[in-house]
Amino acid sequence: MTLQLLLARAGDGLPVIETPLPTESLLGAPLPAPLPKPTHLYNMSAEPDSLREQRWALVVPDTERGLRLERILSPLCERRAEEQGQKVDVFRAQPGMATGKAREFVDEVMYPTSQSSREHSRYVLLAGTPEDLSMELQEELTGDGSCFVGRLPFEREDDYAAYVAKVVARERDAARPRKARAVFLTAQDMSPQVRSGHQFVTSPVARRCSEARERGFFPASGVVAEELPAGGKGRLLELASSPEPGLLFTLSHGVGGRFSGWANSGEQRREQGNMWLGAWTELTAEDVCQRAFLPGGIWFYFACFGAGTPARSVYQPWMERLVQSGMMSKQQLEGIERSRPLDARSFIAALPQAALANPDGPLAVIGHLDLAWICSFHDPRTGQTHANRLEDVLTSLVEGYRAGLALHSLSRFAAKADRELRKQYQADAVAESSSRPPATNVGERAYLWMERHDVMNYTLLGDPAVRLVDRPSR
Image 1 (cartoon, rainbow, N blue to C red):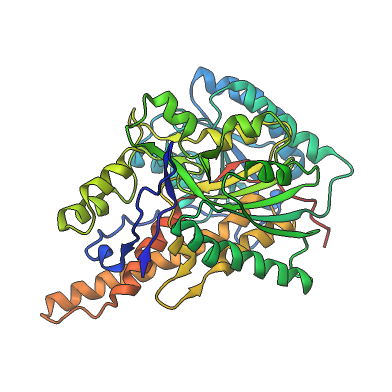
Image 2: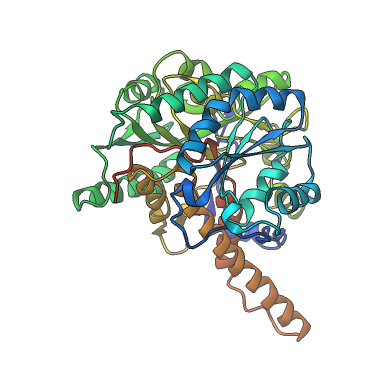
């Protein structure tokens, strides 16, 4: 088993880690912090796609900006209130909440035990940047897998207004589409990482969805699967310009730090997480905000930092141990650390922000909030693909289920990997106390550790209640 990273250096596009890391690099990886456990109730027996039964809530920062955002988002709140048959809850959270305060806010303010589960909202929209509403608050809401969470992360308040107008107008359109096409693209920059990604992720997912469509189980109007040639920005923009709602799945390197380092945090925030297309070409925020780019669609963007960059990567302690053990060079770690935020603050990538703010852009973007690894959807120990995991998400979207519910299926796999991983660590502890050798399979533990971390970091940017297409009544 090897570990391949989808991160390219800004400027020349060279992979930050050219030689995949071996399985043994995960020996001694630290036990992850426990996932948040649900301490509140939801209407679990009700239809999960129904806002009338599951409810929708808005969280804004408890600041003057938060009050302005609440006013800007009022048309969307009114729309959701119509759907659920009652006024939506609006919660105001202090910026900068650490984990303890975030947990207290979720348990005592949003979901108090004094309320019936019928009054607890499973669909939650966070309105604000990580400076407005902390990543720790988002992690508390998403960690136990019970909530369907999305974030509107715009810096500019005008972008919130543009997004709200787009969503409300499309949902009120009497001629809402019933079908969308599915487009699967690999940005072939000729690197071994992207070639593996195409072989083990994009191609199997596209094939499974196409075969399912032929059997009537993937109700897309059509399926397009292509390997973009190096520098193929024109073809990508052409495919994304169709007025028909589209589900776009892309796999590529995400742009990381320059060899010389970022000049300043502004440059980093503009460029990091851009889609590397090879041949000195990348897809930027300017490319997706000045023309129709996936209008009314949903984009699953598979790349490092596709959704944003955390203040500290969850993989940092493991990589530091690798350098100490000699399994990773200091130069490789330095290459990755050039992508750490210069101002030590988490941020959302400019590319998905621009796409969401575009009136002719998508309704939601699913991306990664950290380093992205191929092995979460491909088990190199057996050669088995886990394309079914992505197929589940994409099928739910083309069937017209809400975006937050569709992404929720991935969190189930993270929770399962977390449970299995903890059993193995416990078994090792018991063996050690009995002076017996550990019974854990090294390859299995390595795979579970990476899977648990990688899958947990996929996030939804946009309202979790949006739909790609109008869902037929049943």
